[in-house]
Length: 231
Image (cartoon, rainbow, N blue to C red; front, top):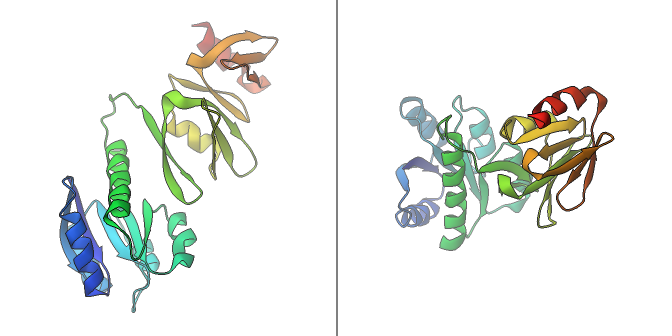
């Protein structure tokens, strides 16, 4: 069960959100607030997993309020102003609901929060089947089995999927490598990470992947790769 509170200076918006929460069985809305000061005081004693947070608040904006929280809490921003979406997602928001939103859109947002919550709280021994990355202001869930290879560039990377789709993310190679299981993925070049299960052959420092993609092996990665691939 995911615990949550909602903060919005519009009572009607809180009533709608409460009614939507009642229709989601994995979510418990513990309390609602119209003032950020009261919400902050509550969170100091009763931290929660998720915040529904209006951005355009009168005293302190929702974005500034979230920046000041000491605990790492998931947040779904709600607002009638679309221009705040970019800044909201730069704060690692799970989602962004533009008012007025439907029950269907709300359910999609909280389902995303549930999936991310389960991912963050999985047991160390659990088999990881998905990875979450941020792409175009969305938190995207990617099945590990669908990743063909990862290619890094200056300030972003491309996750190439087996179905031909490409997911762009402003993330470093080191960052994505820390999310991928080391027993299944290996970095073979400063610009490439590949899944071991999709390597067809290796010849003349070139890896041939399923589907015909050729990936070079970097000099500084060759020894580590051969140790793993040889076993």
